[in-house]
Image (cartoon, rainbow, N blue to C red; front, side, top):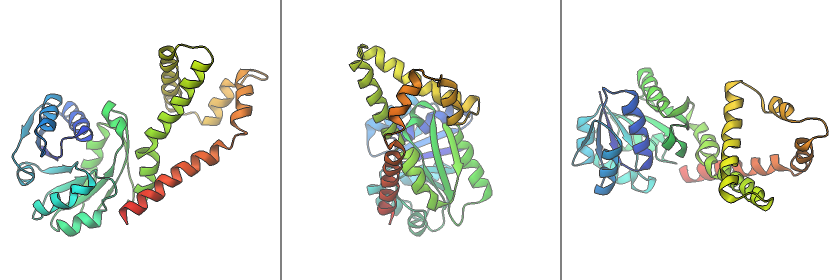
Length: 261
């Protein structure tokens, strides 16, 4: 089986690396207008064949992942307009109907990945177009699962995925930044604070997942009556943080809808 990549940026490289490491028999074909990007891609991914054009990617591969920026998607689609491949788009905001109209014989699946794919911790949603088969959707699910977690959804829900997990790493990074800054203000050296905060965020997520705890259950585990956690919670839980987080994600979701309109 050959999987093609049109575009060889960071996300494409992360996905290709996960696919090739999990499926040693899979071959990868790639094209990018940037020769340096192809060179980086080829160093990071095994069993790669660099081809000379987008059309050649479609000719070489069974499944083609469209990993280009939304603003150049129109040009790419015009070049591969006769493709009959399974096309998997990871371009933010580009609707399935847009791709189907430009490449009418293709089967189309749209994916909203996120940047933790770079470390194998992706959180993604994906949706199939009118011609995508059950087998196509199962294949895309398997491909995405090599890089993290992926859920099949209806396309209208991909805006919510964009606002939550697509934009979410930036929001979480701001929270981490605030935790680190607070720790430094309380006397910790910056590198020590950063390491402790990163471990706290990562460990909390893993604990919730591994033991299938609800957030409320974990809060109760940590909160001794009259203790330090209760003192800190009193400030946090009176701050309106739920409304702030809700408004933050809603703004990102609304913007995703605007960009795809």
